[in-house]
Image (cartoon, rainbow, N blue to C red; front, side, top):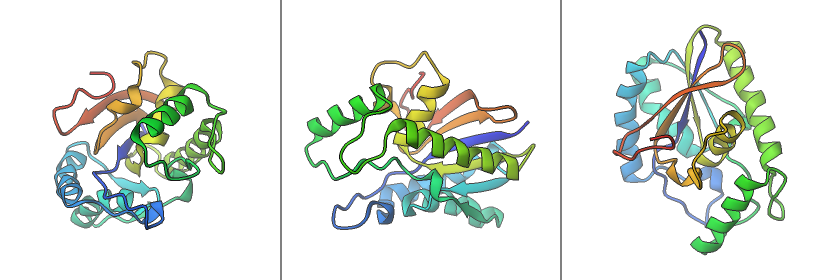
Length: 194
């Protein structure tokens, strides 16, 4: 069986003065990444792939260094392009809700959920094909993982994307397409399905 573990990155330190792909992990996020390494070892992770964003790569780095594994970076594992910085939290929440409800909606300069899901699934298929029969951890982001969950589960609770925490693991059987198996959080939160 080929297993993909989608890893939402550890807590980051957003900085509107930097490109989003360069946002680092926060101090807490670095500790979370260190703790995550033990969970990945428990799950028998044999290969690593990641979004090119610093926070996703750095979430996997402690495990990669402990196991001497390379991290294969794939541009298509990146977060959904929103199209601009939305500083107002209420406005951001409304935009994200609409983005998850309508796969063809996007902000000016942004990416639709449909396009985001298609490129992410193509990247996951490449990762699975490169490591058949293995367990692969894939460093990525909450928005794009939310779209994958929407595509593969019909029983999602309302506003489920708010339940995707940092870090968060989503385990899929990738032997024949993608089949969701389980999730795991690290801060006692119930998760999406808890």
